[in-house]
Each structure stands twice: as C-alpha cells, then as structure tokens.
Image (tube, rainbow over all chains, first blue to last red; front, side):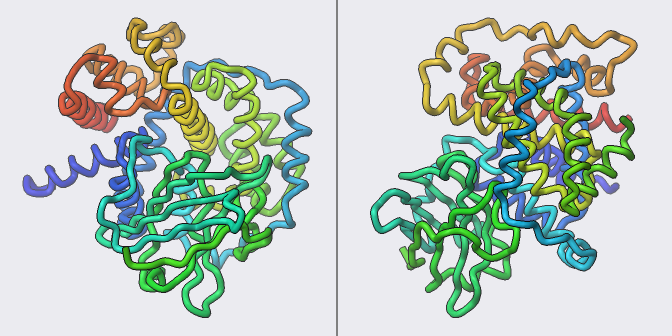
Length: 230
Length: 179
C-alpha cells in the first residue's frame, strides 16, 4: 500500500470501528451505510470489526433463559404472515442491498441519540395519523441522502412494528425500512429512490416484527405525509 | 455445536423451518441472554429483549450470508445492538440514572478477570496493549453504548480528546489484530 493510501485507509478503519461501536452521529452513520452498498473493502472492514469487537462477549457467561420465553417467541412468529421464500436470484442480484438492509436492521438507532433533525433539509414531511395518535417528522438531507425521522407521538403496537414506505407518483410503495424503537432515527435513502422523494408521499404501516414479509404493506396504513420542499 | 451446524440452522430458518429455529434457540439463547443481561443489567428487560432478538433473527435469517460475519458473531451482534438500543432509550427516558453511573468508579468490572490467560482471545491481548482508560472507553462504548459525550464526561476530558482516544485506540487495535 502506498504512503498516500494509508491515511485514507486509516480513516476508514476508524470510521468502520466507530460505526460498529455505535459512536457515529446519525448523519455520519447514514453516510457510512450509503458507502457500504458500493464499497466491498468497507464491508470487509465492518465485518472484521464486528468479529473482533464481539470478542468482548467471550467472557460473558451463558445464562439459561426462563423456559416460558421459547413459547412466547414462537407465538410471535406464528402471528406473522407466511414468509416469502428467499430465492437465489434475490441473494445474488440484491447482495449489496441485502447486506445494507441487514446493517440497518442490526444498527438501527445505533448512533448518538443526541441527534437533531438537520437545520436546512432539502425536503420535509409530517407523517401523521388523522387522529394524531402517530406522528413522525421527517427531514431529508439532500447532500448525504439521509432521511431523519423524529417519532414525536405514538409507538408500534405491542408485538408489531412500524414500517416506512415511499410512494413516488403512481409507483407501488417501496419500503424504506422498519422504524427502530429509538424515537429518533436516520436511514440512508437508496440512490435509486432519491429522485422519487420530491412530490412523493411517506406512509407508515402496521407490520409484523421485522417488517412486511412480502415486500408490500400487509397491515393497516397508520399515517401518511406528503414530501415537500422545506 | 460447531460453526457449520449453526450456519446450517440459520440457513434452514431462512426457508421457514421452525424446527431449525428451535434448534438454533436451544443452542444459542443462553449465550445471547447472557449478553443481554450484561448490557441491560435488568432481568425483565433482558427477557423482553431476548424475544425481540430471536424474532429479528427469524426474520433476517435469509440475509445472514450477505453479511460476511461468522454465525455466532452475527447472532451476538444482533443481540448486542438491540440491547444497546434499549439501554440508550432507557437512559434517555431517565437521565437521573446517568448521573449516578457517572459518579461510579470507571475501573474495569469483574468480567475482565474472567478470561484465563490460556483462553485469551486476540482482542483481550490487544486490549492489554492499550492504556487502561482507553481500553475502558472502548469497552464502555461496546458493552454500554456510551456516546462520545458520555465517555468524555465519565473520564473528565474534553470531547475532542475522547474522540482522539478512541480513534487512536481503534487504529492500535486494528494493527495489533492484524499481526
């Protein structure tokens, strides 16, 4: 490796480590996740940090959970709609997207909880239920492609999840992911969806834990909000 | 249970094989429960979190291969991240508790003495090359989800100093782990 490459490499080593630890701001975490889609070397760094830092759990003794939990978990799985089988084509074609989606699932909410919505977002939306029982403010940072969410009112129903959808023009809803339990969150909007944000609509539906198993909303739409320039 | 067997169970979960899920739970839940107890330090919450974690594992089993993590690391990462998320929400909701924690001695806890020299992982060896408070900061970030601001307050250093501690520690760890 040339002398010129090392500082960049060091920056990425640190960034991947901070991301794995959960030390990045929402901004920086979203930008990192966007890079992961396109940079295999960064994914390797993330995997290495995950493996190595998990070594901190080696000394943690196993503790048998209470016997009744297994049945409770199965009951929750039973509550979910039948899952679509994962075909090979999806795995091959969507490899990068799949790993980022899991990273969002793994790391969802795992950034500095002191995050604030950006001061000067390109686009905003108020995703609200008619009766105000669920209200999520959204702000989109055009530079980083990060969508910030602030769940101001409402929570997922017990044993259910809230999933966020983008409806661009006449297109079918596309999932942006499951809202994490943290009140404030940020996610990286995939590049191919960004053009559809302006003039689009954000919606939140009630789904089984982990989100819709079908790729389309399966539960009730709880809240909607048009996306407008701020 | 070996690595290949766990991978096989995860792969079968991805096809909706409930018997494989039960086998995976049986083989791994005690370890993940231990991790959640360590992170959350509260039994009822750890029990709730364990359920969420295994539901996540079920729904994301199809994405295991895409990640490049070994199976136990994948499972532990899901558990640890979910635990940290809950812990941070709890801290946000009850800031007073944070104050009491901040007063306590930041010295390493008993778990750091659990690993006998002969069983030391590479990470423990490499941690030994860091200064004690730097190592403690990395541990607190990983196991307690402490933020830069919280770590700076705990160690009574400016925020930028803590960022530098972490960055240098991560580089040292990566260099040591690559040897």
